[in-house]
Image (cartoon, rainbow over all chains, first blue to last red):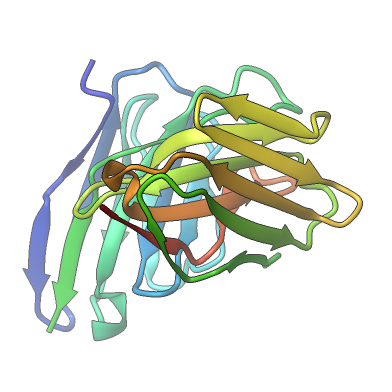
Length: 116
Length: 113
């Protein structure tokens, strides 16, 4: 099992450009998440998908859109990149067997994005 | 959103000593508290977690304690080794979120030989 994979690993964009960050998991997990990590800020939730077919906003959703393409894949799109979106982006997934229980989130290796 | 406060932000210990990292949370509905270790250039990896119906959990040199009344939880690492050097994050589950997490800002632990 590869676990959670993310592409690309690195990306440089100019202000106003768009791009999509890809995430896939092969653990048959139900829930998937996108976080951003900035120096001294920990990880902040951008969007999450509790199950296939649903998506919800997290703490910092502005400037982003997501698509839960199928059970395996959850993409994050920046429509018009801004320097404030320079960050490391992590995708995570969890099994979430039943409502009322929280289970382990497994993280991908991250995408390092710079917006000039 | 609800906050998770983590202290200290940096911690330096000598090999063999113990390290303690403390977190407080504000959401009384939080019921799951994981700890992650992040090495340079990698994603966070779970090292231990605790649920709200348990006060303490131990796994070899690592232990976590939870005080739900006071809304704080701590990570204890005993007999530290240089390979324990990393950034450690605490987190607390977010109510009604599909089980997403609120993270602390991290503690950079350095274990010197």
